[in-house]
Amino acid sequence: MQEQILGPITPFLDRIFQHLAEDKIEVDDYELDHICYRVETVERYLELKQEFTNYGELLTETIIGGRPISTFKLHTPYRYKKREIYCLELPAPKEGSPYPEGYEHVEFVIQDRFQTFISLYPHLEFKTKGMQKPVNPEISRKYPGMSVKFHHHPIEYVIKYLD
Image (cartoon, rainbow, N blue to C red; front, side):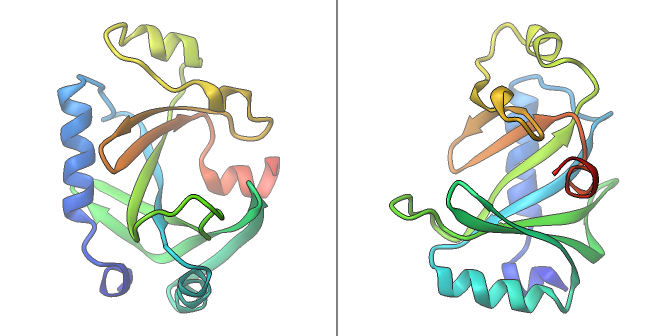
């Protein structure tokens, strides 16, 4: 259903998993807990936020970085191979930081401490600025037009218990 609104997700996830495979980052045992879809305008954000109330439960709308971000738990998950992805993050655009509309990042839940995880991949550079976040710290890898983030708790848990 949501793909009728946002477009097919399989090509985006195929590229994500191709980048991870090229980097030799093994994610089979990690939950892919949510996907982020970016929009270019506040008007589009408001339109999609309203539309998605038909396809899921709005878990939260929180101001982060000076703009609202809505997170939905979808009634019908995205399905990709053996994965089911129930949460969709929809951020309004940051003023002065335009993004083209489309799927932008995914987030995996890892069990390892960040330094332990990073040490598994000494050939790679991870962005570690997000480790300083007081709620749901993260590390990430940037790829052309997309990124992959790794954190310790599913977003639904963070919203219910840590936020």
